[in-house]
Image (cartoon, rainbow, N blue to C red; front, side, top):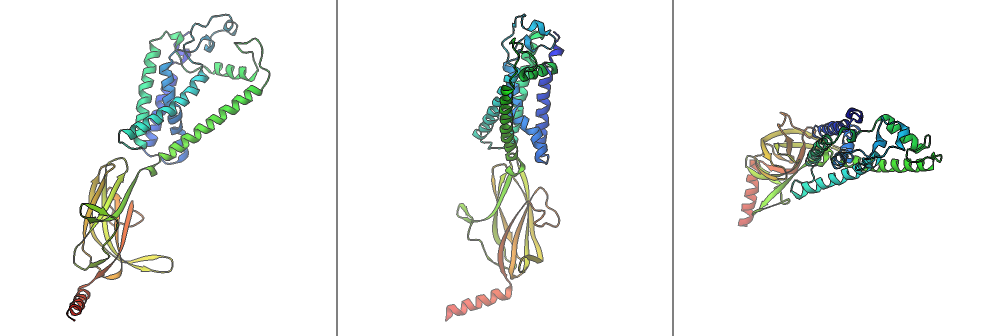
Length: 359
């Protein structure tokens, strides 16, 4: 029997192609849950385990799988190759092995300090799948052509389905299977397993969505060698610098250069909304932050507006900030309500404090 009839490389090619496509969908952040699921679910629940089974069992089960042997010879000809797996068993073990491999890689990346990262897990699964597929190719190539495992032919798949349905006699039995009950039970079991694994895979896809990568931004005050998220300065003075520290926690699983634009806004509150009626940009800066690190960015705020309806806003962007930053375009936004005294107010306060002290 020719090796081409066994299609012993086609299944390996499909595993590699599917893995490459799934990795591209994940790394390129292709939108759409349906599209991501179509590519990523097999990548999680099938490809790595199938590659493992192909490497561990490079031989086909027996000549019963042959698509060229006459049916009359199936019962009389001995089956010398029994080291392989039936294709149905191979698929079931592939699914179980895939979930084990993916879970193991996820735990390993976390143990190595890389965190539960969709990117790291995907790269790990891809690498393991490619290595196992290459191993399977080598092991199959070392075997005689007539015993190499591979995709079963359509005729064999149809014959197996027909045998299970009771339409033809089983090659391993002389009696037809007339009862449809075993077939219905098997179909229900298969559908249930596929539905469960698909839901698990879909959940893992959604968990690996971009929302799992995030940046946390908040204001802090320096207390000796530590930082506290309290006791923020609420009263500033026009023309005087007041240090305010912005904390940026990078959980994007990559190094990110953040741009921070500081604005002072005069706002007007109505019944159901807040409107900005005046704004001044105070500063802008950039800061690269490593994955898993927290950067403390101190800004020396010098107010140019005065009043008690002022809002100090920090617009945070990944990459370069636009000329006109706002809440809509900003990746993260932090604000602090402040009051800014002018020179006359400060002088009056000083005089009152001095007079009060003398009296």
